[in-house]
Length: 273
Image 1 (spheres, rainbow, N blue to C red):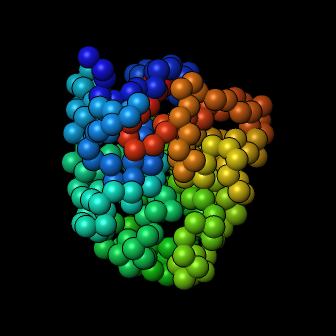
Image 2 (tube, helix red, strand yellow; image 1 turned 90 degrees about the horizontal axis):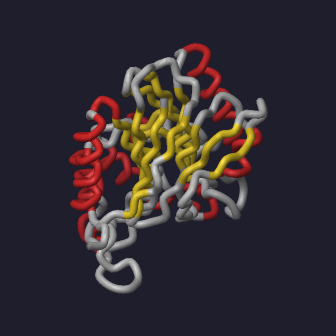
């Protein structure tokens, strides 16, 4: 029987964390309001919100809920009639029901405007991270922070959110209103803070900037300019990385990069200790 969710091969990453337990990271990106399995074509039978939730539940049962970190790398909105008819509310309901630990924003989260984004985020039960844009002048700024700290498997985990250059993919009316920070500078600033001041065992860049080939900065170009980042969980380019890709940072450390394609057809699983 064909699997309903494709799972990226789990890999054990030894990142020097002090905790003795193993952390399981489950991650997804660019689900784009796809709540039903694909009906036809080569991906027929794959995907579905119920199936994704069942998979996450199975991982939590096997590894213990306190040891599982569930992340979404953005663009949970737009792409099916669920979004156009229900204005993005069901996406928030699903994120809450599945118990995500942290999400970042994708460009399609802005499709109905900043005010509507704020309304939806007000119902979200997990942190929303985005460090390279300043939302503080807007209502949405009440619900978006540059980073979040989550404790799982005895580890203190810092998660920094990054969003692509929205001037290329969001209406000018919205893009021109949002002050933007330099992506590399802001990542390094918060990563240093999380490592040195907050004493995080693990720092994750949860990005929606694309794997490679995107205009401006992308994941493969970001890592060589970064420090204090242990893992990049990416989205935006809909890249299906069957295997982990590594890039070397400024200190010569190999940093893993992962991304899971699109529509929730795949979910990635990493083991960290």
